[in-house]
Image (cartoon, rainbow, N blue to C red):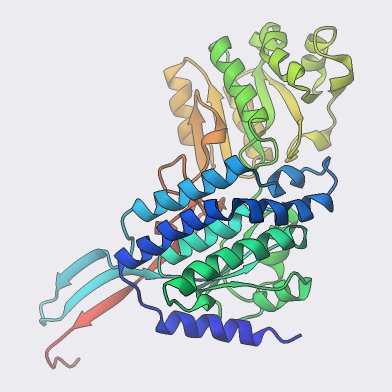
Length: 414
């Protein structure tokens, strides 16, 4: 199948669509209302997808829509509408000795392609952020979310049509894998591709795309419980980081504990056991937990359990002798997404913040906060773990570029 028409229509929509900030916000407000109004239809289509997936699959929770989740999506859309428009900001403005007035202003990236897996909320998020920033979005969702994504794009198109806006500003490609391959080859039509999903998906897009890629990496997340850590804080932080939503990229994968605090490990892990979390512990941690942690949930860790993104009710536990060893372990196994320390030592706080190389680094709080909405960004298009252009939650500002405007009065260069 030839997908060129999809790309041409999207590009044409970008050239002819120019909306005021007020109009953009009006459309987004209407979309939030439409999401709520169409809740029953969205849930019915989502159920068709859920029926095809094993509930034990880590993606099942990501795929699932609920009335509360749709309400949260609507709230995020409203929050984005309320944020300042990021376009047309003057980043610099100067007049040169020859009289040229040179300014640098923010502009949209252009046509943004997003390839993602079983997360229908991403369809709403990507459109909302792209529309707010004047970008055109081409969406390639996973086949697991086929019915959900079609229902969502139908709602989006109905709102756009109501406002007499070309519906091609938001394009959902067919479910076939060939559509993703075509999108990655759409040089001249698509300005950037953002993959959102598993490490396998991200690696595939990075390897095969001829269009520039902004990576949103997998989350292999650690929390280090330091020698001076407060037990109550640590217990709550580790429990929340691991169990709030196990299928998301900011969920905890490995708790690192200082050997001087091993005696506190049973108390630290008790809520995890009650919640049914499987632990893969190194030898020291295993010996300390044995007899206290549920036997069916406690296993000895192998090398493969460190540096693993579990996306389920599983996690590893690593014992270290000091902060330096914790930093080394994180450096060797991190995906540079989110890392945390629990400590009461101010020097250790600053050392951790300064030396850990990750998009988000935490002291005495849960890694579950790595999220565009939680960072006051309204929503996110993904969490970038790279360093070029964008890092961390990608929201409005990260969906802009800039251009130079040069005003003269007949000047020529010698």
